[in-house]
Image (cartoon, rainbow, N blue to C red):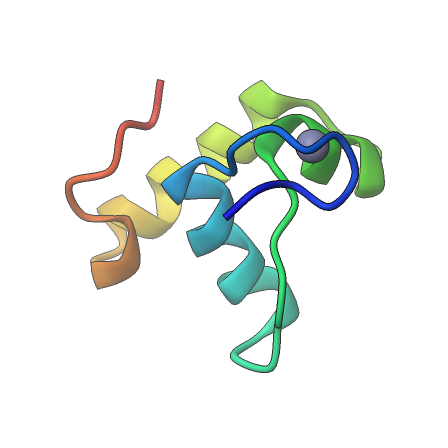
Length: 67
Ligand SMILES: [Zn+2]
């Protein structure tokens, strides 16, 4: 899957975050950089959130590269 904004490959963690933020109805996912821009945050803060989800036991984030 490629990012609809910048056409780069979407990282697995960005897909997992989109599912978490937007919900299961999400039909496409932005890459981590575009996701950060959309939510006016940074990649690092998104990765922090992903780590919290993982540490909280969310299976979507197990085994992902969280930088
Ligand atoms: Zn992008």
